[in-house]
Length: 436
Image (cartoon, rainbow, N blue to C red):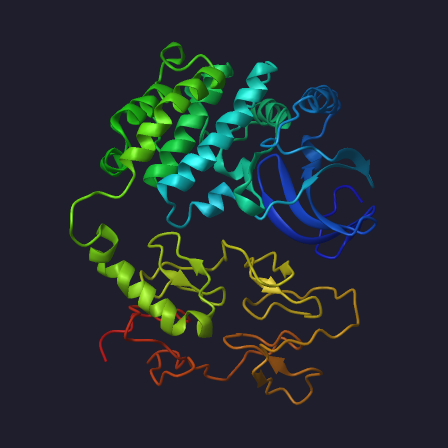
């Protein structure tokens, strides 16, 4: 089995693969179901060509070390084993990553709540003399009730050494000295500073990390000056100018946090709030009230934060392409090409054009979302959901001109329904709508 790509609905020991959650230079992560316990889990499977005898020896050592880190904000490794010739790491399944959460606006109190938990996790590791080496939003998982957990302890260190040896890897949240092969507790402090900076400003500083970084003015308006200096100290270029470790960083933060909360509280001045003066915010809230339920615009554009639906291939607010869906789906599995959701009994992806999927069940799954029928007389099921581009049963291109319920406007290019009152671009073909 090793060497063959892993597909949805494939069995791997007692685990049934549901969908691919992500892929990095070192490993792929999958959502799976433990068929014995009946629970959903995350499987992290390193790429076969990177798993050498030396790497395996390091894994055993680091896994034992990481197992000592018992903390509510550190994701526990449920098990690590070889299954059908593959090294498989099994973790509890979170709702989303912090990276996904940061694609929409985040309140200061939420930022501070997450910061509390991140610092607690890394401080615990540093107490045990463990350096993480890969602190970034993708490795911070969100669970119900606002719980945040840091994952990949120990594993990240092995991945870093392996990727450097193979000539792969990116800088991202990596400290300069760590990129040169000399990680330390100061390196984790640097990464923590960058994560905090991005949570507050929406921007990730890049090399050469000159101060002030991009979006500095937004950061300055949001937090107390003392907390701003705390951030600056964390991302100093020279390691000796940073906090010694996350323990010291956390101690200083806890002293400053009350000032940060006071600074972020509502102002006493009478007058309209900043949000109420932002016409875009008002416009999009009105759109969501009128059309959010009809169009299922539960996601946001990564460029403009405008509300978008999983079925849209273009942001109707700013025109950014959405060939790949980057957010959660209401369906049980994902298409590996466009990452949009699929039902378990669909043979083809109805959102993008590509090869079909092997359906492991003959059960037919009904859904109230089916609103039309395929024009192919030979099609077995014929059922279509709004804004499907291809029939999920026979793969025929949908000729129907979908409309937006309650709106008569149509795109002049593709003929599908649009909401000219709010949109600038057609979300189905990407063409500018112009003025009616």
